Length: 330
Image (cartoon, rainbow, N blue to C red):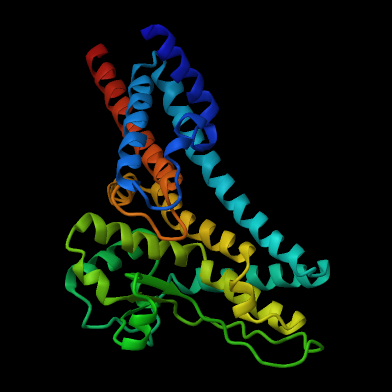
């Protein structure tokens, strides 16, 4: 019986190359928040069994290579999913190929401008002195770790009560701004190709989060939004739909297609962070085991984060074992 179970898990290791939740766990994938913590506990137990099988694999080098390939494959799939979500919006509004090509060219140009400018200091960038030292220091350290000059980004505390009330569940958010000219659709040059420092906003709700694990995962999440230029992607899309098709942001935001894009961006903010850094993966796994993102990220997302954390821990364990074997052989 034990051999049969082991074989079943081994087979699933090959099926789960894309780190998608397997069918045997779908009963826990509620997507509602109901029994979320209990469901995540059962998902975590399943993943720990997979970790044991990884560690018992005879060919350590082959297993390490497989783990690295899974991370790379999942990153590619996430980026592809974003492009599919954007194309779904294109199809919904029947955006012409010419206009869509212009949109993608403008987006690429702005991403290049922002990526370059985030590597150098901008005197106008402000770091709010009202932000607690532990949060500010974590943001600065993670920005530097990701090759971003902290002085290229605004970091501010949200104090406007109306904004706080309207975002009662928000603890932090990242924004990038694009300046454009309101004009009729005959105007072809309506976007200003200038760098405006992105902003990371901290809401009072975050001040109740005293755990460094929570602070680290939240900061990593917002910084990844900036790295991936999620706000730029949506802002320029909104500008194009408004300029050429008279589609307002309110109309766009109410669509299933826009919600799907937002879900993918939120997933990317955490999964791509976890793929890049084992410590962040561990923090996100601990954090997401207790809390879901209402309307966006639930049990399936936890499975993916926990699976990535397991891959990192397995990778670390196998490398340590290989190093010990090498040392013993010498």
